[in-house]
Image 1 (cartoon, rainbow, N blue to C red):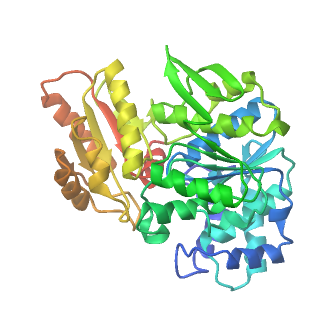
Image 2: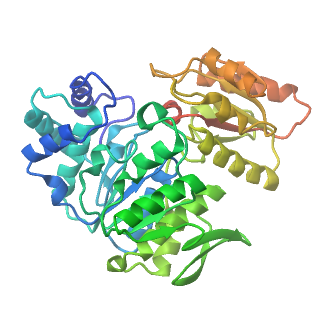
Image 3: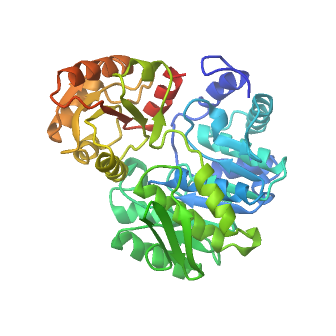
Length: 442
């Protein structure tokens, strides 16, 4: 892929056109994409073996672990993930590499041509483009991440994946998926297919019961965290166990106890798929080489890092709902236990998110939160609106007009603080904010 984050690419113009094909950004349905895929020759039926991944939190990280372990075993892997952080190309990975700009533009135009002026959402038509790309490059596996929900998500046109994975389910996107946990879980469980093994991460009792009923109804072998597989940290190692035995592994490269769970879920899925022939060495190599930007990512250079107080740690995470905030706060508390530093948050969130309960997870952990409007995002909550939410949650809060100003504010407050340890700055609240930070930080 050529061009830096600030350069306009041919695909950007095409992608902008595609956003005008439907009046709604999200309109959950399968009819439109099935119509387009039919015109394209039904590429969804000609894919390499598909691992389909749904859930509220941990989908992206679990997909990253699946890819890293498969590639460590010598497999060629296609990946479809969303959203992207900086460039759309991040969503489509072909045999280990991000899709080339020329191929992306050609695929998008091909899908645009076959769709004509028929209504179709941006996610649906770009998903069709990804499926088309996957049929034109050889691979041993496709890792397919659900965009939203599962039952009516555009990715759910895959009739027979080799495995379905459901990561932790919690409240998010209630305006699309339902107001109760049971309704949300029902949408996620929509990816369960007849006779296809389903690997299920940690769930509340209510969600687990619903998934158990769905797997039984579809005669789908169910593999549950805490019952059929588990993992924990011990002596700075990761210990994984299932009915096939126990494996002593290095800690995942991705930070946090929640990443041990995500890694274990990926391992459990691959160990249920003997055709892939994954050995312990590939699992080890995958855990230590996995990459997934914007998930408790330590930023060590760039203009934003240079603005931070001397000696400061700067972290970035895309957690954007209360469940994700609790996992993130737990990971930061573990860092604090090992290396105590005053924690300052910089937070930007979308209008649809539960900011008060997000902030509550950091009460007693963060010295303050500086709120920002996500740059260039019309769906962002305003800095003042987030400031009110943070105060309601019991946090000391300050609004800032930009990410840069937020860092400068923290520098001033850290200089006046009685605790002179270099601060730990955590930018969080949205993958949209994470993308903005990565763009601004070069």
